[in-house]
Image (tube, rainbow, N blue to C red; front, side, top):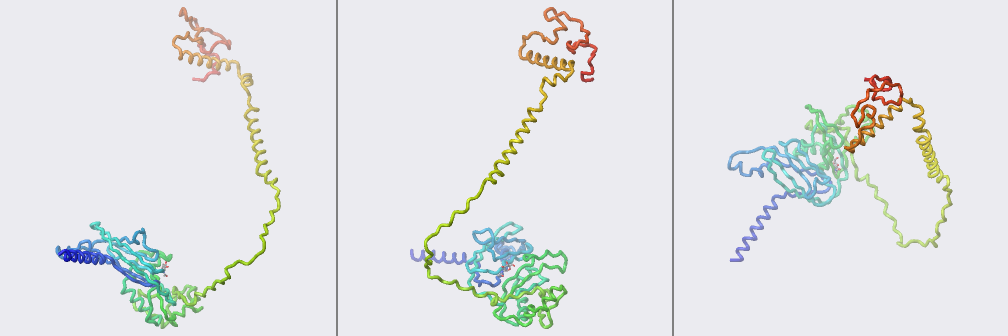
Length: 400
Ligand SMILES: *[C@@H]1O[C@H](CO)[C@@H](O)[C@H](O)[C@H]1NC(C)=O
């Protein structure tokens, strides 16, 4: 009985792990071949509303966006790119792996209606393979990358190029948006496209048609900037939007490009005897005096001169109080002295309540008797101005 129970448990675990494994999509691809994976919105829609079609009879077509990254990394691996034109379009992961290894890609689909999220895992196993020795790149002007990534279109393009190459064994090597290669964003008008670069490779030599690209004649026509047509007998495009721009065709002969690097010469592993160590002579002595003058003495002299100049301006050219007083009118000096004295007096009084009556008003009343004196009329400059009723020195006072 216990054996039966554990067997049941074991099979459940197996089934679960099988289902779990189903959530991963696995690919095994060679290095140097083009890889495309279409993120079908329909598949993800099934994950969002698995039973709505079956039971409610409703079928949603929600806008979706995708976020793709390498597992435990913020971004995709270097060789893999993602594109999706619009939330109502399928997304594509595409690129050409350059080194063998294993890539785990996480794909998050976000439903823009309900904001639900699902995750898919893509496991890409990349195995080593020799690069195709003959490669060629073509430019398709009237296409956009999303339009050529579906496998049917890729197949059509490959078919045309196989006819041009006269080979049945072409392989896609790369597809690139022309914008990623410095192309311009087209005007948003009908008939303007971003353009796509398509690279294919083969084990077979270039055909006669392709080798026309290498002729000086071709170079001359293309640099002249005239509209160069694909030479007669070499035009194989059946769909006008798949036609190549002949002047942008480039051939890569990888067989010729790699001259074998010279092997390193092997020594015995023991250094030759070079005699005794001969220490180098000490370098000739150098005169540092001019450097010293320039870096220390000259700035020092400049600083001293500046100091002297400043000292002269600050101390040597000041007038001094006595000299200024001698230059000033007697009456003006007196006026200012009284202002100063009175201010001092008022300050002292403010600090002390029981201060004696101010001296400045002394001539106007007697502090003990309270008797007032009539105001004095005098021209004498020693009489305080404040007593004057008609002001004889009005030119020394601020005018009202
Ligand atoms: C494919 O094209 C892209 C974009 O131009 C480039 O970065 C990448 O190196 C190419 N891959 C190969 C294998 O040529």
